[in-house]
Length: 112
Image (cartoon, rainbow, N blue to C red; front, top):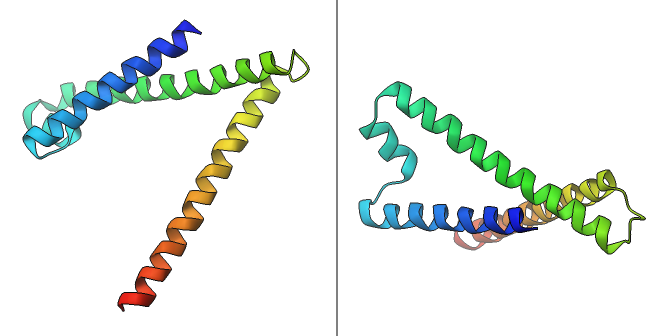
């Protein structure tokens, strides 16, 4: 449980640092790395940042599976909890896409 909490806190810290950097410089982190670092360092940073993002997402999926396993008193196995978590993510994502599409249609209808 402490690993999930620490990972979330570190993700918040990284995101707030990137937001401050964007506000101060007027550009995003990837563009600044591309402008100021040589190509091998840029690719190394890209790979490490991608690995950190994947590790954080996997941590949330596994943490959700452990929570569902614990809440169900062991009746739902860990793989079942992962399936529930991933299904919930895709359901929320599809609902978001639907409402985004609906908003775009209303906007185009009203203004064009």
